[in-house]
Image 1: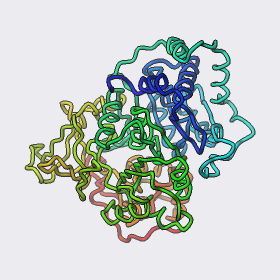
Image 2 (image 1 turned 90 degrees about the vertical axis):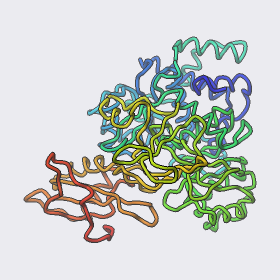
Image 3 (image 1 turned 45 degrees about the vertical axis):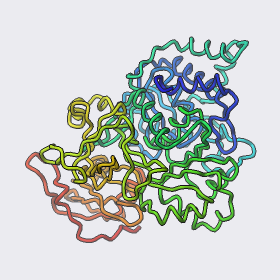
Image 4 (image 1 turned 30 degrees about the horizontal axis):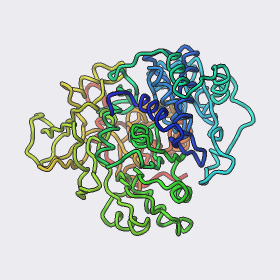
Length: 551
């Protein structure tokens, strides 16, 4: 099983195990048959709006059942899933939508105002809105946050309400005698031929430098990593997956949607991480697998409200080292606390390779590494300057080649040529490979900044800072931080004739960019170090102090 797009696996499970839980959303269970039908109706809605094969459709919402419905609906139509971070503000969203040329966006009701602010700069024609509470049960089985329980009395003006549209489409479909016949009729209505090598996903990333670019990932990329990731992790259709990291991120998508749907497993979905709600959901729905982030584990263990819950269903808890390291000490502490769950470093990968290039197998943990290469993934470690191979165990730039590698960057052939060379992805990461096939990440060549696991692109932040009327020039770098891994430090040249305080600029940033991108350190300069071509020399930027701005 594996040589077909993931949405065809969804169809298959809907036929074979129609009543099995596919998604649990705070106690609302969506079976495989229902999820298949909902995604078909959603695809029909998109078709009615004029969306065709190969067109990007944007997703702008936090984790929710509707995200998964829209994700597979887009792909069933042969269109391209285009996630936008729900933390985006106007300028960030406008940039991505403009680059995509998207005509349709799915947005949570609370984010419609951001969409409308960005809309004049885009090609948007239709906004499909939804409320997180639309699929919430009357009696949730684990505590939803206020953003999920909130319900507005009115549909955002000028938008199409997703649930109402799905009900209208269902009402217009003739009843079929059997589930299989109903599936066939819905699929025939969509009538689209999809190749495994068609673009299925546009995931925005920095690549090696510059503002975010859309990495074109195919149906083949997705199913390859889902299949091999599941095998390496020892997962089966019996596993129940706790999905907490953001689905719009490539890793959250792979572990929270793709692998479970590939296997025919069950997803226990959270809007975001909350320690108490997490342990409630584990005790109630018995997940067996949780791919999380290292700081989530002590957040639970140190919370007095999270003691005494039955967490014994958990078997495997791979955790990515963001903010704090995944260590043997942390693993042992969680094993005791949870009643036996195994913790280990999750692995390594990047957006351009659909992540999970190396994965730690639970029966072959080697601390200090990022696991073994997946079967089918080739890795070269080369000298940064010469691009010649280095001996095993020596650091160099990591190059990757596999059926998971992307097709290139959306509408950016020159940037594609810089990163994708003869089918090999130049990762811009430094590491080494040992003789047993274990990969260890040592650092990054890129100027990418990682704040609590979120990718921050220097030019992205700089372009927004430059919009402030008192900013003449701006440059940002990453500065090591004990709790967040890195934070953003900004160097500012003030426009002549204006005045600007650091606290004032930070307050403005909070209104105009995602919280994790907001500079924590601001220093003013008379001039910035520049190359003859006018590019800032970020490697020559040094802080006079490391004190965060307070306001």
